[in-house]
Image (cartoon, rainbow, N blue to C red; front, side, top):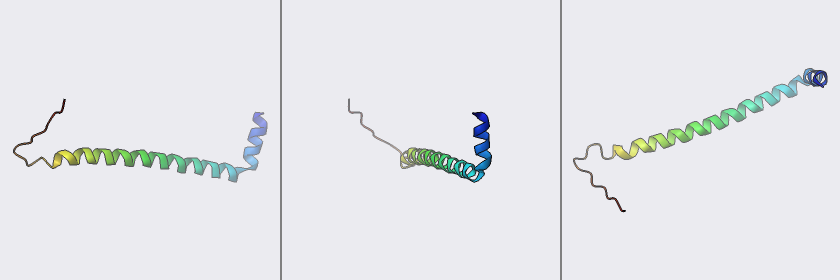
Length: 64
């Protein structure tokens, strides 16, 4: 079985390279999506307190 698999891989090098490139592109897309999501989360977490950085007094209500 291994011999047949290796033979087919040698016969279809172009297909093997295409599959490898597709895997790399898919992995890069998922990584970029996660990275972009984290950047948006962190920037919005930092933007909210920045509004009150120059304030002398901040009043917040707790509704319990």
